[in-house]
Image (cartoon, rainbow, N blue to C red; front, side):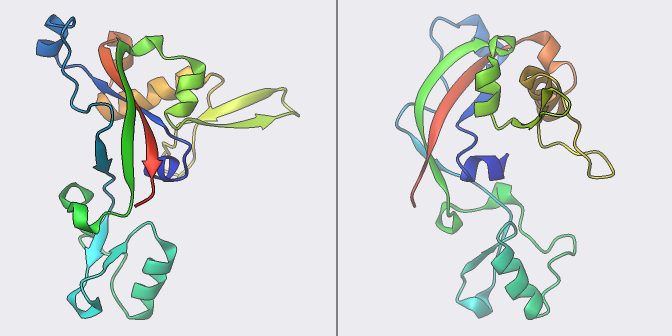
Amino acid sequence: MFHQTITGNKTHTRRIVKAHEERSILMPSPRYNVGEKVYLKEPYKILPEHKNSPFYRFELYDVNELIRHDYPVVENGFWKNKLFMPESAARYFIEFTNVRIEKLQDISEEDCIKEGITYLHRPCHGHTWFFNGLTNERSEQKGYLLAKEAYAALIDSINGKGTWDSNPFVYVYDFKLLDK
């Protein structure tokens, strides 16, 4: 979903309300607030011999430049885990513009698209296919007839099987991508 966010196709995200928060649903305390700015994390590498400038795994120019200098960019462990990326190395930031609580299954088809679900209209078949970015062992994406079906499969892959069916309360965060 990183690519969907940086291209402006993903402008919403949902986070499950924890059980202890759900009991006091009248006084929610979301992790993020309207107006708050955060940086997006991505796999990166800082190389002292390149003036400590960060290189990014999802930046084709960076990868090609490192390959040109014989760096093992495809080896496990070369890229630093995005979870440990410092803000100073970040190149993308978002600002939260709205926060609300709703049941997970109350998501609309339109909001599924704002969550990064993509679609492809096939006139020859007379319908639209929706995709969630997940691939199988052959790097193939499964198509869904409804955006909600694609989103349900995505949320189950992120938060565990059965998440969609349990229909928990979620924080819905709307955000916009900022210029650094």
